Amino acid sequence: MSAPERRFNEAEVAAIIQTATHWKEPRRQSAPSAGEGLTLGQLQEIGRDIGITPDVMSGAADAVKDVGTTEFRHFLGLPLRVERNVKLRRRFSEDEWEQVVADLQEIFHSAGVLSEDGSLRQWSNGHLEAALEVNAITQRIRLRTFKAHALVLTGAGSGICGVASGALVSTLLTSATPDMRLVTALAVIAAAGASIVAATAFRLKSWARHSDRRMSEVAARVIALDRSQRSSPDALSVSKIAD
Image (cartoon, rainbow, N blue to C red; front, side, top):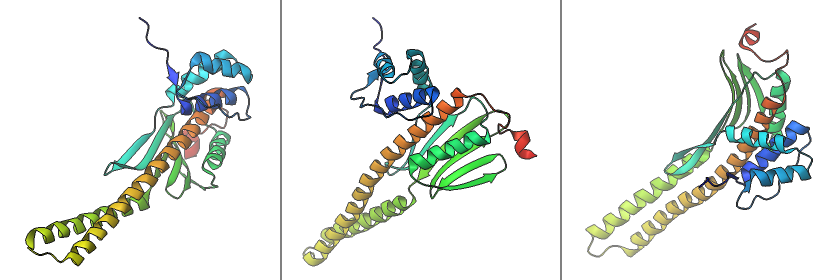
């Protein structure tokens, strides 16, 4: 019995169509809703409707499979850091790095700040960073973002809830007739701390999903650029950067 056909989820469908469109021409196309996922055959049918050949769509699907996955770094079970690395098959030119920066500015809605340090090219916006890393063997685009204030809020909320809860339990266990005003106050403080953690967790999960989608789109565009053009004479290289 043959294995079920690979189905692509909504994010992958958007990335595949973005990649295939980039290979075909520079204009952007929006992807239809993928529902529970689309097979390669269904994607090829969509491609025919928008002028992309089945071979190009198939190649774009292979590229998206190679894009990798987003990694989430957690604290107390909450995603505080989102990272993604995109390995390149060749060295990017200065113009191509500028294209990546333009895509970052469009996708993250920010001008950002550019910097250079030897072979490192970096674009940043607060705790959001994108870097073109070059060495003698490989080259990659590294994306990462960190929710710094959420760490403070989570730690503070957990601390408040823990201290208040501990004091509440101690009060109830050590006093035959506990002061109900104190009990009520401690319970309110513990609930407030728990509320801070819950609200932060809700916002963090939404932020992590948005960051994942945006990084996936950046990765798809980078892969499309990496595979659609040959390295130009001004491609970044370790020897050139060192000069």
